[in-house]
Image (tube, rainbow, N blue to C red; front, side, top):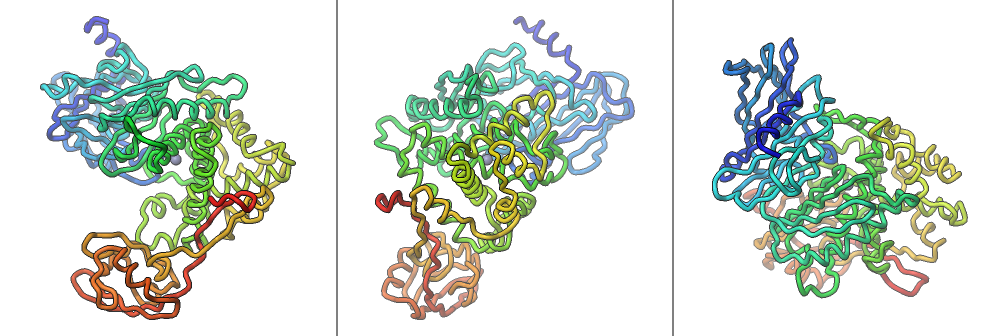
Length: 594
Ligand code: ZN
């Protein structure tokens, strides 16, 4: 399309954004926002306080370093109303904002820009035009000026309004909700794709040039296919035309965020397959689990949503007691989809499941907080964990996935294996997800027991009360036994189990990350942050040094730990106790140990 026509199309829309990586070295994006018909009483603009999928207040507006408004050649006064809101003086015609955003957050949640690449979520860069968030918008994505961006391409699922695939240029969104649900990566990256469910899928990898892209395609294609068939067994159609796995590889990192037709992933370079890689390293299996998890969210949380997220309220915290369903069930199905599609072995699947069971069992916080409470308080507890988290909270991901497992096994056993949690998921999809664009009715806060009963004929109100709203341990041992799988708990080994804490090596002593309540370290008065430097007078640089000293002791013995709390040296005597039996193992028919 000629530039003149592109401009005309762009200007036809009442709201237009133009984003420019204006200073990659200084990490600045500049955005020009034009509103054709601003509110005659004074147009209000707002940036979200959080990004859907990551339940924590992040105050993205704090990265706006400069903002100006104008009407034609006349400056228009802007008043800041609160931490994320501006009001422009009334003006009759088109209102133009120009603002600069500092983008130096290397995570899937924010915006990042340097001379090698740019990445942004709309929540970090696109101010919402109050009163017009249902309006279609145009988005012009510009190449950075200067030499650095000459070979850059653009990876995004924003619908095109003239831009070529992988190209800079004109894009569009039907409303603000869509605008902020298509992250954008720009730079030089690897791509490899496949088509399943009628949709083109592309894996985009930035930051790891030696990735074995063919291996990624071979492993992810069956997983995507299995998930599409799971939700749409009849049509086999994906609910999108194109899907992107936007992967950014770093030295050390892990995370993902789901979107309606893409996911932003961050991983360690060594998590990705490389040419000549032998077998399936644990790190790669974990990465596949992450991809599977975020992909499952395309149906479950991006389309099937809690009613309180329909629509999202982005000015402040939006509480739901249902994250155990949306994150927990997704965590249950992520690895399950890998084993169902034949990408991982049953033995590896059971090993991973045993690790989740162990992690939940290790924390005494599970006796204080239910998964419904954990969901509700995600904003201030799960997302803001400190050294006491294991004693105070339970993860709605980990325990939520075990609740899903318990519900699944109970349905299977109660229906003679005629029904399962899969039927519940498909009912949720038909009722709350498939037509979300049209009716958008989310899952009511107390809606799960009725959905389970409708899908399976089984009444689980009593169990859900206990497992979700209570703090009792789940009856996994009995449920597994019915399947011929034995779940056993054993004592873990090592300093952490013997003394009741979790350590991280600093290379110059061991930092106490967690002190478990009512175990030796807690009784002796060790604290999170203490750095252990010696045990019984012997220097401790790493956890294995402590291990070597403790190996000479048995339960009931007393050891002396020397540690720094801040810059003050302290000494405590700890009596070694019998380790808590939290280590789960799963084995089939009493034979295979997993
Ligand atoms: Zn998730």
